[in-house]
Length: 358
Ligand SMILES: *Cc1c(COP(=O)(O)O)cnc(C)c1O
Image (cartoon, rainbow, N blue to C red; front, side):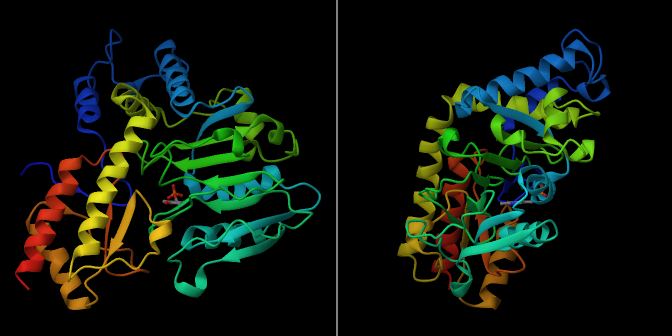
């Protein structure tokens, strides 16, 4: 057995150099004679790791000094609760653009805490596009607008941000660090790590410090952004090993030349696959061309039988996790930062061969 090309939507492929580095440090990290997993989170060795992780991420995303970076737990899903809890004012109202499963979950959780206005939706065409953000009507009393920047399941993404005078809260779980974003345009960016950052278990939240003042001091400590900020993300034991691997991934991106460079590679990888699909007689993409994701590329033959044969054959050829999400069917190739260009090229060769044999 050798390593396969893993197209999983998450937990997802990690850079091989990162895994090798982690393996080399597994038994003894530096001079400390123990694994990072065995260390106190209060030790200077670990404090250095988390500080460095924050510093690297701040550099990579050019995060302004009036923003707070937090390493939390509970996945991106906890943020569907934590963000409204912290950011809703007495208005208790939020606006949402509904673009698929992940905003549906945000809507459901938001409704438990206040009023949720769905100000636009792409449900009419099975979430295959992003509603126009130019002519949106925002509610005057909305505390913020929630969007899912990249839709992991349907394979759509925004190209322009809503120009609202209320803060934009963006779920970037499946696209953070894949292309350059102007952080200053957002109130909150959040992402579960397991797609484009590191292992499952840590969630990154980047939040404008101003907005943190909205939180009621009586919120449960574990759900209060301020408590984490005051304790440098160590109010309780943080997911230490996940943060360590994330740090290695940040370093890997930096060594590649930063987000600007990785974006170029991502655009190249996505273009290769979309070009092939668009010119194929067998495979097709149902996503509106203007809103195609760089990270998650769903495709289908149009036949359930052929789709499942394709997935079966792909597994025999060292490609893993190409089946689509259960709600979408078909196939999906998730080509996150850590998927090498060769992985996409090999997939295309395999698709070509599969098509020729039909
Ligand atoms: C995976 C995903 C989530 C859920 O993340 P968890 O860490 O499992 O809670 C939320 N939003 C998007 C866009 C995702 O891709």
